[in-house]
Amino acid sequence: MRIFFIFSILYFISCCDALAQLGQTKGVLKMLEKGKPDKAEKILDKAIEKNDTLPAVLYAESMLLFDSSYSTFDMDKSYTKLLQSKSGFSKLDEKLMEKHAKIGVDLLTLDKLKKRIEKAAFLRALAQNTERDYIYFLNVFKDTEHDDQVVLNRDSLAFLYASNEDT
Image 1 (cartoon, rainbow, N blue to C red):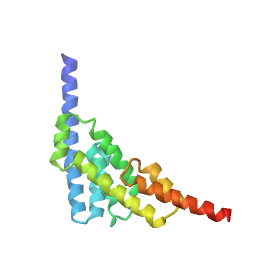
Image 2 (image 1 turned 90 degrees about the horizontal axis):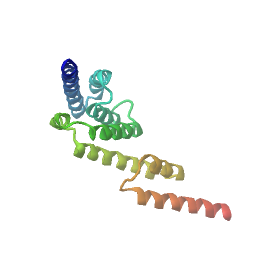
Image 3 (image 1 turned 180 degrees about the vertical axis):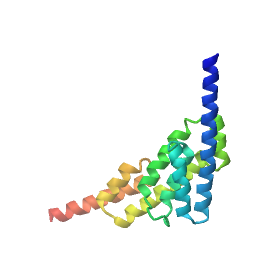
Image 4 (image 1 turned 45 degrees about the vertical axis):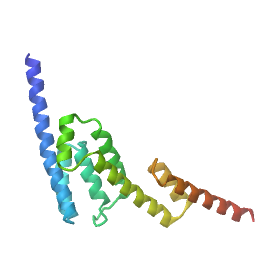
């Protein structure tokens, strides 16, 4: 009975901590909406200090890293954080999923951001138009709607290079 009581208290404390972080995450998202990535970063740093594995925190970090006005914009790192968020989200209990949904973090939101990042990465690969960049896209951004086009472009470039070397 005593052990149950201790576990109950620990669970309550962890839930309160998660709720506080969700509030901070909501603040980060609001700052990003207002176009203030530097303020968002300060709030996010506090949330990360408490728990850097909470899906909402990872989502907010992904959003910040994908904000082109942010000084350390990093599309690839944003994608990694988003995938971590999706993985963690699927492991949440129902109560925490509902709390995440209240601040706008759910599977639909995560999927929308994933598609936006994948499209931006695809456009980057198109702009650079090298075999190396197409291969990088296929290795990092797996199973996207752009894969067929990327493979076609990569193969076309490889054929072109091979043709030029043979002549």
